[in-house]
Amino acid sequence: MERMDLKEHRSIAIDGPSGAGKSTLAKRLAKELGYRYVDTGAIYRTVALAALRAGVEPSDEKEVAALLPGLRVTLDYDGDGLQHMYLNGEDVTEAIRRNEVSGGASKAAAIPAVRAFLLETQRELARSFDVIMDGRDIGTVVLPDADVKIFLTASPEARAERRWKELLERGQSADRDQILKEVMERDARDTGRASAPLRRAEDAVLADTTELDFEGSFRLLLGMIRERLGGTPNE
Ligand code: DC
Image 1 (spheres, rainbow, N blue to C red):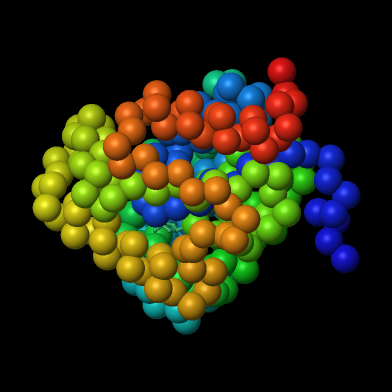
Image 2: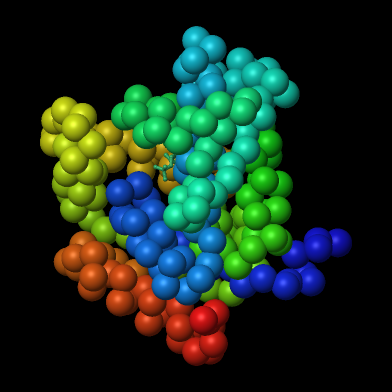
C-alpha cells in the first residue's frame, strides 16, 4: 500500500529531546555521507510561527486546525545544503529560531491535525533523496522503515547548557535557569502528548551524549551508521 516499500533511497532517522544535538550532528553527518539533512522541527516551527502571527495561541487545537488549509509550508536547500523554510512563499528560516517559536512549536506539534498536515511533506522528502531526518517521531511514525534509527539524548542539564550557549552565540539574551525550565517543560509536552509522542523506537540504537563533546558524538554516530548501513555509505 505504501510506496515506501519500493525504496530507492536510504534514510537515517534521528529522534530525541530538544537540545540533544540532533541538528548539528545530523547536518555534519549528512555532509559526510552525501545525504540530505531534513530538520523536521523547522517544519513544526513554521506552523507555530504562522499561528503566532495570526494571533492564535499555538495550543488552541480548533483555531490552529482552522489555519492549516490556508498555509503553504515548503522548503528548499541552498547551495551549501542548508534547509530554508517558507511560509506562504516567505523565507522564515531565521524567524522560526526565536525562543517564543520554540515553545509554540511544541504546543502546535501536539495537535493531531498539525501532525497529519505535515506527514506527507516529510515522507515525500525521504522518497526523493537519501536523507538524515531528525525529529521526535521519525523512527516511530514518519519513517518506520528507516535504514538506521538513532535515539539521541543527553541529560536535561547538559541540553539546557547547550541551548543557552547557542542563544548567546546568536546574540539573544537568555537566562540559564529559565532555559532549563523550558527544556523540561518541552520534554514533558513532547513525551506526554497523545499524538506521536517522543519515544525510542524498539529498533533504534541509543546514543547518550551527556559526557561527549561534538567530535566524540559525531564519531559515535558515524560509527553506528556505518555499521548499520553495512559499510557502504555513499561516497
Ligand atoms: O527540534 P525543534 O526544537 O526545532 O522542534 C520544535 C518542536 O517541534 C519540538 O518541541 C517538538 C516538535 N517536533 C515534533 O513534535 N516532531 C518532530 N518530528 C519534530 C519536532
